[in-house]
Image 1 (cartoon, helix red, strand yellow):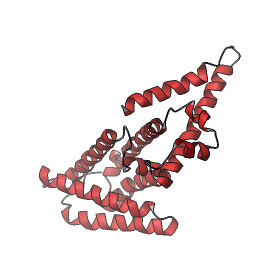
Image 2 (image 1 turned 120 degrees about the vertical axis):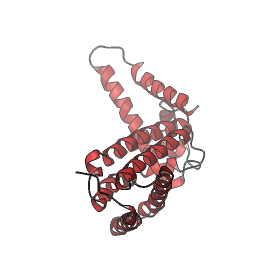
Image 3 (image 1 turned 45 degrees about the vertical axis):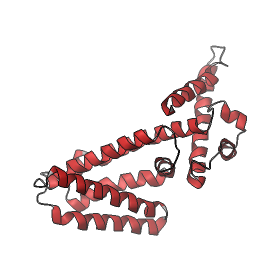
Amino acid sequence: MGKNTEKGTKSSATDTADTTDTDTTGTPRRRQARGERRISQLLAAAAGVFCRTGYASASTNAIAREAGVSPGTLYQYFPNKEAIAVELGGQLLQRAHETHGQAFRPENLQRPLPELLDAVLDPVIAFNCENPAFWALMHGTGVPGIAQEHEELHAGLLARIEAVLRDFCPEASAHELAHISNMILGIFKSSLDLILAHEGEERAAYTAELKTVLLRYLEPMITTTPPR
């Protein structure tokens, strides 16, 4: 249902931009660009509303006000709140996947544990701090078209963590690696709540505490260091 809505939203937004184009002077491209900017404006407004009120309490009227447009303008691009959430969630999930790929680059995983934690955690934390709507949507209730994608993201993270642990802890069984990976991800998610709730020096302090916790948890398990 969510994915169908998303496809319909994208096509309707494109149609809105294209159907008014009747000349060959460059106007179609300019109008399409304006339509894309309007969609970005509405998604940014929705991100702010979802963060402040949560998805369930958000409304299209509130999103329109946040964007500084009329509800009618919003409905030219999105038929309802669900379609906005699907589009925004899909874009943020894509960025999250890209961030995780950058964080778990092979060269990062060959570093000593303290440096590895910095290399992996810093970009992931930065992404969540820069996109608080991602956390709001992924952990909100009643958000359409998100659950399966979130589960896939979660499973992908666990697989990445297990792969790293396998190199550092070659003697651990698959069962032990699964438990440790789930614990690491649980610690990270719990700590991220605190990190996102603070700013400045307090945020930095909680980030440092997270790294300390993970370092002390993992150090006794490390039996080898991956070759550089």
